[in-house]
Length: 124
Image (cartoon, rainbow, N blue to C red):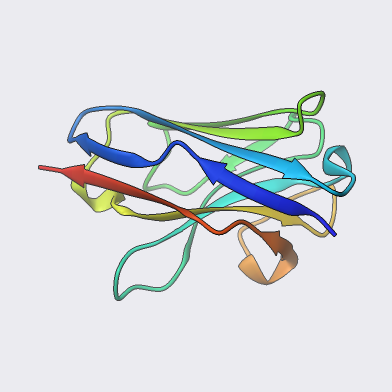
């Protein structure tokens, strides 16, 4: 059983930056791809970014490409989402998730462990 705890959310003005972190415990973190998803009020949860088990492969949603960067530190069991040039439409609860395999994808159904989420609010 993997436990995931996100941190780093908050309120920021448009154009600003935030760095989200996700700390993993209780499992083999380095064997799983990791992903970030988000859910805005009244909307479905959507994929943001994923990183493979080694960190060698990443993939982003078009809406965040070039602005967000996902990374991981297997020695510290953490995955990070650096968010730059934030926009009001980035406002959402952000969730960290652990994939069933070493290679992540866009489908939330294939992520088996989830954190509790952290709120990101971007003001205009």
